[in-house]
Length: 144
Image (cartoon, rainbow, N blue to C red):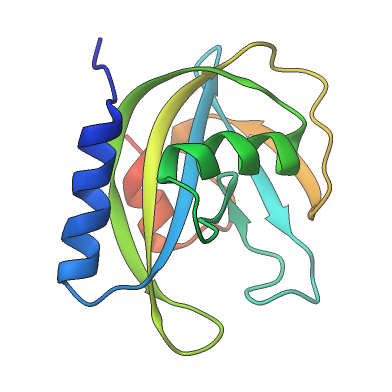
């Protein structure tokens, strides 16, 4: 099992900054019984209606791992027990026209229910081979 050290994550941030990327998002890929947790963006949000993995902005003074734990709890009500791996990143154009880098981690949560949504209008546990409408980047991340 891969141990995700603070030094490793600091290196990810340094690489992104060196590439001129200033917006960071931390994202959790939560697996349970072969299914992945997806949440759906509210219809009136940027990219409304799109399904995604739980994720959120890394705030000033916060590490990527801090944001991963906070955002997972805020968006799903689930608590991360362990960060089991780094799955990679992708870059996208954010709502302000800048570039954001999303850092994606495999995580194990203390429990998988109940999922309590605060920023999304629906959630589902899906087989990676049966994904609903997700971005191409998310599809590449979790599809077989």
